Length: 120
Image (cartoon, rainbow, N blue to C red; front, top):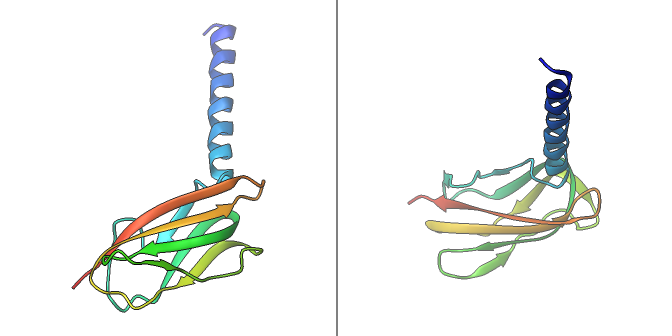
């Protein structure tokens, strides 16, 4: 193999690794409970947003099947947490969409959404 090919491959690998690290640092490495698309029971009491790095969550809202939007309360916005837990209102059967906003550890505004369904 030519030295130029080896160096080009190495540079490309480093670039891809750095890109992946930057994506995770900006809140991409997250999970939710319920997970996106999951069906849960009407007795579900909380949601969790779980991040690889601490995140300051500023707003979480949930749109219910009847069209009403709820503000979901959890830890204060001035607290950076890896796991954010929010208390849910009583859930009726149907589809729900959760939207969140926050700030990453490096100060960039972040947001995301996920949906879940409550079974009958």
